[in-house]
Length: 234
Image 1 (cartoon, helix red, strand yellow):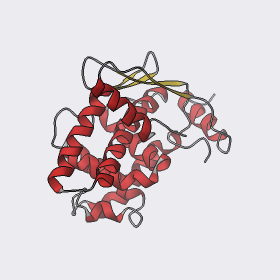
Image 2 (cartoon, helix red, strand yellow):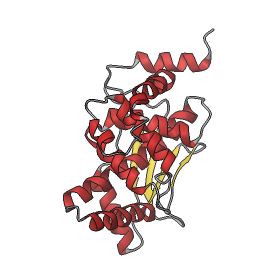
Image 3 (tube, one colour):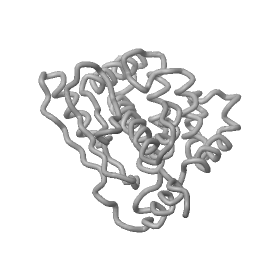
Image 4 (cartoon, one colour):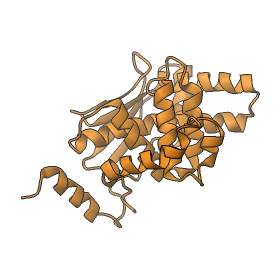
């Protein structure tokens, strides 16, 4: 009898080529303040909370007011929660950075949308790890996030690496801060297609001395978990 995890992967692989199943539901709860309402609308308009990744079990995504600025995965409830206060923190931080750089509004919006997509895919990474019986952790979630983001939203990959790099040294942006974590995430995105995503290396979002090894880093991660991070329509 095959190992349960192997059986699960085989089951997932056998569904490739089928239409996406309704495994992910998204709910935007009412906001309790004008600032939260602005965040709710921003998150909804960004369409960041969407995926075509095949999930082993149904997952609920809830955007809502919270006591703290956070994004979380609840294994028991199989629920991803994105807090409006965290969305607001991301918006205000990136807007301030863009104003300092005198970046235009289009660049600012693209950075914010990409950052929100990273937040969601990081939590999706937690979900995929636990539902596939793997040890959960921030590094594992980021690895899944790099694969699923590139699959779901390839046009956001470069901006995602940039936004996370810009936020890496800032507090209050749950799962997007951390210089080492940002560099590793950018390396995985860049390594998936160094020619297509050359702007990541040019931007310095992955250290220059590390860039040549990013394709190998990406291939190791893809070999380990890639079969669990595939599109239902692939």
